[in-house]
Amino acid sequence: MLILVVNAGSSSLKYQLLNMDDESVLAKGNCDRIGIDGHIAHKTADGREFAADCAFPTHTEAFMKLVEVLTTGDAAVIKDMSEIAAVGHRIVQGAELFSETTLVTDEIIDKIDELRELAPVHNHAHALALRACKSVLPAGVPQAAVFDTAFHQTMPEKAYMYGLPYEDYEQYHVRKYGFHGTSHRFVSAALAKAMGKDPKELKIVSCHLGNGSSITAVDGGKSVDTTMGFTPLDGLLMGTRTGALDPSAVTYIMEKHGFTPEEMSDYMNKKSGFLGVSGVGSDNRDVSAAASEGNARAQLTKDMLVYQIKKYIGAFAAAMNGLDAVLFTGGIGENAPDVREAVCSDMDVLGIQIDTVANAGVRGKLAKISQSDSKVDVWVVPTNEELLIARDTLALITK
Image (cartoon, rainbow, N blue to C red; front, side, top):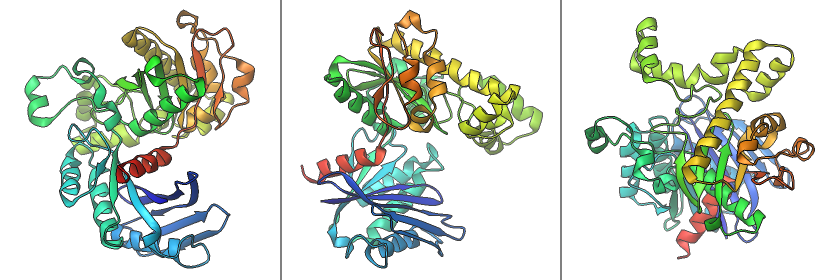
């Protein structure tokens, strides 16, 4: 059975076509610069590639090109779209309306679009993609919406509420929502399987570290707290995002620079983080290289990141009243042994003992990197959000 997985952004549309009989990826690609000019890059599992500049005024044209590339030409993998059983979509913000994977209808698309104030960069684009996909797919092919925020709907009220007047929650839905939920759900379940444990038995701190980063406390298979908040800006220092910040610093900087709210949001989301502190760039690899060459601001950036991760691991261990395992995932989590080692060093108080030799050899693969006598397991667990979306979609249409 074939499932198409779609991850739409404001000007992009990433996709994977999976064969769920063996969960293999038949093809994947990206339509980007939608609304600007347009480009598609497509690659099959057997190495065939297609790339071209295209006219993508909207997501509909991007979908039409996606269908064309999947079904015709030298890089085709299917004869027509009727071979696809369903389409699964990653949706960033489901708020309190959606706590599970949902079959898409016109009403559901409207509700996703109505949440665009809570995720202005993402949710309107998701709605556009859902409508575009519906217009291109053969009649009767179902679509499923898989929400990034759904996994975090198990957080208790004491964890997701802010200290604002309660009316702001009632009227404007201001609360912690959390993000990367699809990834945290996938890797925490994969870790339990690797450990030979029932997820209900484990207290896990899941560290998704990349250009965007978040840490989640997973107790008994459920999210009980996470670092990202009302938006993905909160929590850890990230590639271009500030992470947690005193709100008074925001109003102070706005006044000093004469920023509008939109300009301040852009400043915190796109010009801060690794980029803003280091002055080198937003990529951890560039920052690490500069730090190794003696760049003090780059080293400070690395130190800040490591310190914050340590702090959240300790805080979430306290919140769960215990800790069985720490896992690292995401681009940095899976591929930066130096960050993992720095985070896990001097964590004896929690019973964490990293195996530096094992850790140094792990990049992008499932592996245990703690010592045999470590009271807390430490693992690298590659994430695969697309596979989880495909699994959720398959489960929904075969109920």
